[in-house]
Image 1 (cartoon, rainbow, N blue to C red):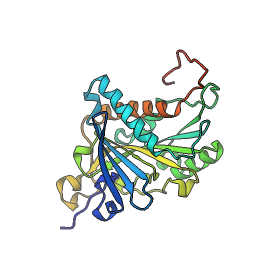
Image 2: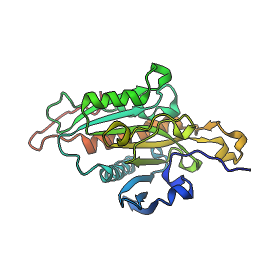
Image 3: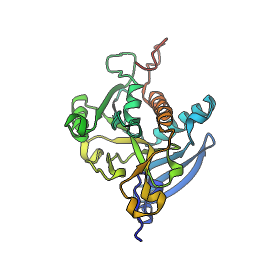
Image 4: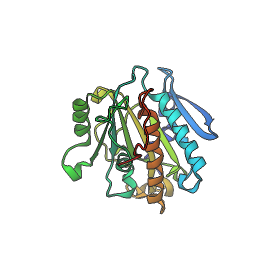
Length: 266
C-alpha cells in the first residue's frame, strides 16, 4: 500500500526534500536542536527544537527553553534588520479550535509597542483568524497589514502537523522560509514569505495534530487528525514560551531608560 503522511516539520520531510539540507544536531542549554542548513546558500533555514511537554517541567526548565528558542530565533533574523525596526507579529489559526489556537494565544499574551516611546522597535500585532470566520483570506490580511505598518519583518506563529506522534506538543520549529498556512492538513493557502509579501518572514510553530493515517499506517485513515488529550494545557504552555521569546528578542528598551512595572501582557 502506498505510503502517505502529512507533516510541516523539516526533519520529517522526504529524503528528496531533506537532500537539499545539511542536518546538524547540537544541544543548547542541554536541549536538543536540529539545524537545517541549505546546501546552496549555506544559511540556516530552519531549527527544530525538541522540548518535551513543557508544562510538566519546573520554571527553571521553562526559562532554559525560552533562552534556547531565543538564541535560535536570533540566528534566523536577517542581518539587515537594524535597531528601530518595525516587526509585525501574526498569530495564525482559529482560536475556537484548541489544536489551532496557538497563534491567537501568543498574540493575546503580547502588546504593541507602537505608541510606547521607550521601546526601540515598533511591534505590531495581528490575529487575522481564518477565512471561514471573516471572509478575508489570511494572506491578503497580512499583506495589507504589512503595507500599512511598513514592517521590516513578519513573525508568524501557527499550529503545525507532525508525522511522528512523539513530536506532538513537544517540539518547536522556527523557519526563515515563511509559512504556508493549512499545508499540514491539506488545506493549502497562499504562501506567506518574502517572495509573496516583500519582507522577510520567520515562522514559529508547534505540532498539535497528526494525520491518523501516519499513526495507523493506513491510507484509508487519510483526512482524520488527532491531538493528545492534554492539548489545551500544552498549547497554553507553549504560547507562554513563544510570547516570552518574542519579548526577549524584539521588545528592546533604550539603553538610558529605566522601565519599572512594565506590564507583561494586556
